[in-house]
Length: 93
Image (tube, rainbow, N blue to C red; front, side):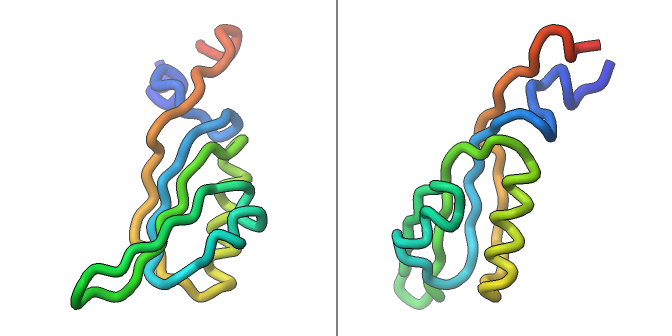
């Protein structure tokens, strides 16, 4: 059995992601980043970081967000899939 399908995570299904980058992005970037919530933090003695969080329709959309962050020269700190829709029953082999 394919563990990717049995876990509910699949490249062509919606999932919620949390992405951290080093640097600052304002809330106005949310629309360009497919509606992901944008939050920034600045801890004493640390460089600023931005967290993007929300649901994306598929992994192609995730790649689009990552390409935008790359174009902005924001170093990627982490990506986490926090939840995933279960695929249709017909897709489970």
